[in-house]
Length: 327
Ligand code: CP
Image 1 (tube, rainbow, N blue to C red):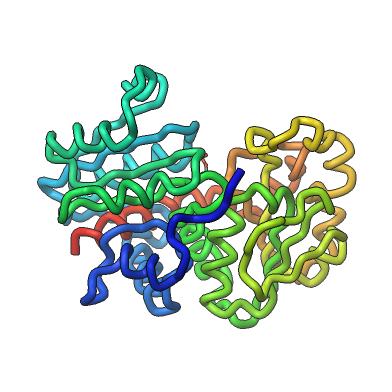
Image 2: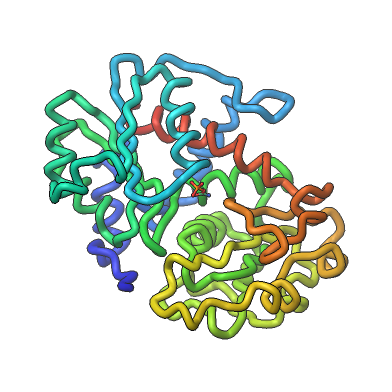
């Protein structure tokens, strides 16, 4: 599987994502975002969150705009939260699933997009297992139409990255004193890539990518990240521990998929392992969870877990992004 984007440089990416005056047009990757641009999105999202931590805010900024969710890969959290977010900022929403779409009859993604554009869809939210689908769409849509990346192969999941940043900021305040350990199947993780890009830009003190040797990323990651294979060393002193699912669907060879029992014993996030984290450490997971594989139920449901906060913050982040592309 290739991870090379069709956008070779951060400058190309920036020019596609942002208008010349700095307003956002598309959201494809966090790679070209500045710290200020990330902070602006987090601040906008924070405004939708109430004192209890729920995304209860509402706006009417997308009145008259139609959002189409094109999910060519499975999703629970991202799809539902984009739909709720779009409704909560006043948009109309339509959903297209792979199982029911004419892509099954041979229609190209661009023909699907052109068809929906003719129905006045203004924002496309796209998840696909192939690298570059969202970029191709962004390059070919009409002026005034936006594309939001809802998960792209192993390359990018920018709204997940943003909700992870928001969750960390809401629990820890600032980034520059934090050690963050991302633990698990780093090699196949678009979540880890987007989180790492955002954390690096916001100046986290230390970013550790912790995985078994067979799941160390083979392709480009943020250069400042520390690659580690010893999970206990990786968690030691960490303020934030982010567990990742083993993404069986992305292995090129099934023989490479770790045995789940052995994986949990050697790399699972357990209460015992967490004792070595920093006092007050938080535990994150993007979902879906595989309990007893990458994380124990005691940790997932325990006092350090902020997993449900991540889900709530995801709605607020998607509201903020939807507003940003129509501002
Ligand atoms: N975190 C995440 O992307 O979850 P879904 O696959 O359920 O959308």
